[in-house]
Length: 301
Length: 300
Image (cartoon, rainbow over all chains, first blue to last red; front, side, top):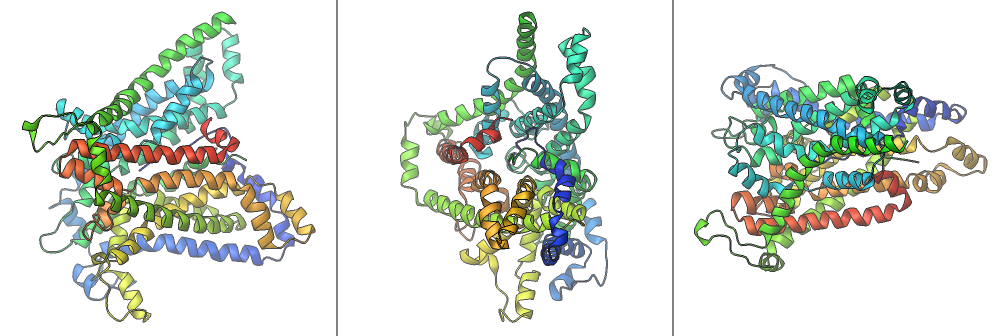
């Protein structure tokens, strides 16, 4: 899991409509190329969707059928795997843990990160370029290279297998991510309004809280969504700093699913579907924003 | 004006400090600690030996450790093969997405879901597809007559790599395609019109206009994906556990095993430092390669 987001002021996807107009020559050209594009896209969507579709079908299929004669269409639909997941497996425990950990990480990072991002985007002070470079460098840190000292630190503080014991390590990737994204968003907004507020006698702080923040609600929301998704999906820290099922997050709980005699595929896939639903829902609702957040400025002319 | 910029600087210090203090505490301080650990013999299973200073002893041990070199080789193999596939497929899909006007919304969702789901879940999906009994991969291959008896994918090193690479390609090609699509949309379409007037065919337009102008985007994708692939952990931990034996063990998993399975904190730290140095070296090479274009990526 890494933090691969480099925002700047250019938002390529914003210009999609313009790009569409710009493809006017495609109309005059024989439409073979757009037909090819269509076929390519259909193949792409099928290839992407199939493993997901198959997992969903299998999660509703009795295990005996699954092994004997796998079928592309569900013949008998059962809810046993989901029932077992929430009764015998207590899957709501890792779900609760993931929500608490990812939620707290996101809130903390957005609050602290937006302060830093405002300074980095709007104020003039020495060492700014260095700080930006430093934050970028930290976002490239391999998690594995800090896992053992974090373990020793948390153990000394008695925080192994606790929520703070996960939230603190999560800040290593979440804080650089939020600061970078927010600097990008703040810079996209024209400074005119804040300057007008300053001329009218507002302080810097007031112009930030009263003018810039309300304007950047969409950007802050996107940042929060991305931070939440990254935290929800994190695996290495959650695996290293939890013991037993009490504080395991969803990815760890699923990865460590064991059956008595064989791999409990039905339950594993049901859990996979449950773990995917929140992030898939976010993607569905916020697709345009997420794409903007991901691609903004990553590709600059 | 000077008063304002002075107070600005003071305010900036206050605003930036909390984030920087957090990053220093949870990232920089532990990194320094890893470096310090790597110079000591520290074995949590042998608390009575203490933590004697061994200088570069752990690094010398790495040089003579075949499992380390194996892990490094697996990581390199995984990185090169998966990133190459992702780049080529991602470019094809980006071109297709750039052509089609309708259905973009659907494609965007389809493309984002694999990116957004936990890597652990992606790994499990592919483990299921390639399961020796319930897996549909075997069923498909047998129905089409490619094989006549089921392959037990995770028992041989060569076949175990297939689901690993496919899972990574499945999960990350969409992201690559999105980044490249953003790059494609920045290319001025007048260039294509001019090329078409001059009689340049589709292939010439691709190799002479699209790919050269897409170079910054391609390099950025390469940075992201290489650094990411080099640190691969979740995917292989779940798919193969590094097995059979240690034949698919990547370097991050070896470091993890040394640290948290064998509790050799000194030696594991030394491996972690090597991973850190290689990652940083790769990043520097790429940023140099990006040249002036790279500055745009580094400075927002």
